Image (tube, rainbow, N blue to C red):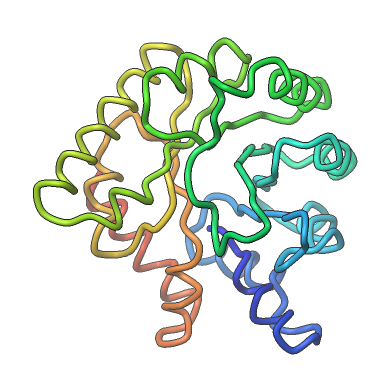
Length: 234
């Protein structure tokens, strides 16, 4: 589970609650296998201290979502999360708008992948379900990719089916290339099943929907329902 938007609610009032660490612990109790948190350059939700507290208190793996910058590599190397997922980041965006251009960033991205790996952090690249991006991830030495599912979630009908086929093909190619494949962005109870059913997808990262659903049913119940939907699809 991605807990960013628990911190968004906290920061809206400038107070200490709701605590994203408490949310992370509750999510783990309810069935989440790990926690993702995105430390953005502008600190609009997760803050540096949140990352340190998460690393200290989590009973599950911490995935540090971050822009591929030297400053973020330095912070991640100090926190030492289980994994770091490199994502594109723009100050003006409301949320991550697409996958990282692993093929276009070349050696600059490669240096940051290498530095994180040297610190003992498992590196993932958040990319579009595109063969060129998958092959670039292999060339850069990243052992994991996370496929961007945002477009699939926004479409309907035949267009959505076509995008799902693209995700399936990318996940199959990832396995052939020796990459562990994750997926995420925009997933809900209604659309998670077909993605969870893809055998070569090992992990799904879901956040905003669960935080929103928690308003109505509570966070633990929202996580349990999502986990049940994923398990049924498998």
